[in-house]
Length: 251
Image 1 (cartoon, rainbow, N blue to C red):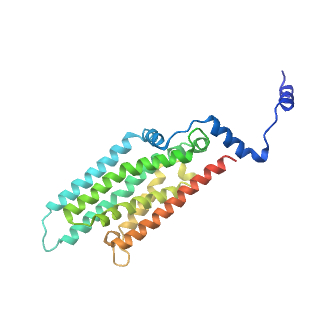
Image 2: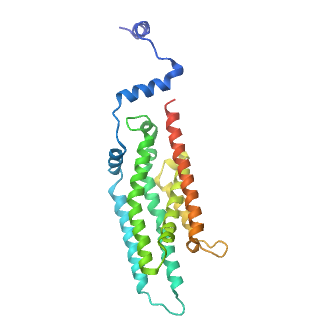
Image 3: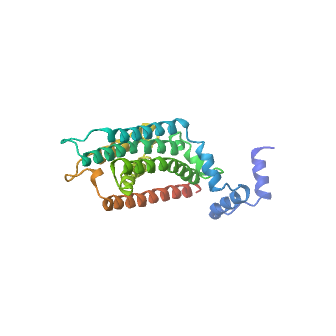
């Protein structure tokens, strides 16, 4: 049977769906044919998506930070090195490494974009939106626990408030995540994982530069909390943008 004959046969015997209702038709068909994957199962699946070397590097950085904080307690105090200097040194060290750990996680979360298959992922069995959210959740949960341990350790060793220590650690981490999601918009940034070093360098310079006679690590809890809430809001907006991108991928 020739192509023209087959096309004519299909036109005569199959009623095509309304083009204007294409989106609802595809979604309805997908809902009937695609098995639902629970959020818990999806998160467990995406945990294996992230390479073990990323967790190993993150763990080594965390261990180094713990050893540094403990060693700092053994450093003798003298007229040129006070308790305040010790606290500032510990906080600046903790905030210094957070952008690197954050960027490592973001590279894994955006692996589909880096390999140029994110558009395909958006319209497959597990939506790209859910997969990305799951990866970010995995990275966030696994990194959150040692970060909180670092905050408690700073309290026990140099007397930093747990809330302040947690915010000093979380703000550079979140800021790097936000900047990584922003830079991912550009085609040139999607071609190489090294592009994620740009947010790392920007955050490192920003958090270790003196602004108005004060360093980032010297900010109070209230100022840090305001910055943290603002970053959470921006992160939520960016995740919503990815959700909209998937909706556009259907059309």
